[in-house]
Amino acid sequence: MAGHSKWATTKHKKAAIDAKRAKSFAKLIKGIEVASKMGGPDPAGNPTLADAIQKAKKLSVPNDNIDRAVKRGAGLTGEAVSYDSIMYEAYAAGGVAMLIECLTDNKNRAAAETRLAVTRAGGTMADPGSVSFNFERKGVIAVAKQDGQPDEDSLLEAGLEAGLEEVIDHGETFELRTEASDMVAVRTALQEAGIDYESAEAEFVANVTVPVDLETAKKVLGVIDSVEDLDDVQNVFTNMEIPDDVQTQLDAEDE
Image (cartoon, rainbow, N blue to C red; front, side):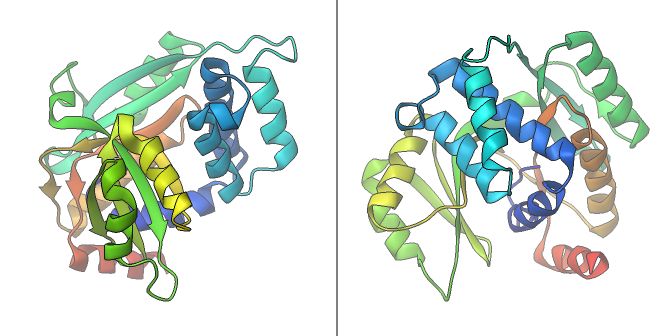
């Protein structure tokens, strides 16, 4: 799940936990296969594949699984890899808008399972275009802080000329935003400046966010968890903004 709030920090912790499950591994593998199919098996010439591989490695997917996924996607194993990318729109509690990104080999299954997961968790499906107009495709790069480094000034110095637009401080991490087309240039500039990054992905970022209270946040997160549990769902983006005090309460309940 992605949103403009301190949830950005929580989602990376959550992803690390979720990645221990075989289902999460499968989603990462699917992303590698698609990237390899679209841009070729060489990460040096395929930035999308390079980022997909880095994400998988950060979340402890075995190298053998990654290598096989790259070869499968590129057609080097004789296996056919064919997925359709579909975006569904929905609403959760409090009028929070959701974009649900799927990669599937069965559109009918994906549509039926997504609708069922959303409605069972208390959300409602939305008409095409009623949610997506509020989102922009952006490059989103996560950079972890270690002993106060890097700081915001060093990130700006490294990335501005490459297309860095905004740096958002989430406490334990920085969220760097770019135009989607500039993301590779910015992450490359960070690497050249000796700055490591946790992840770099094209995401849908909301132009207008919806602050939520504790109960609403729980309800929305319930819909997100229900949807993210589906095999075909790769990402969920929302316009939910979790205030600091609400995030603190959520963190305390998770401990």
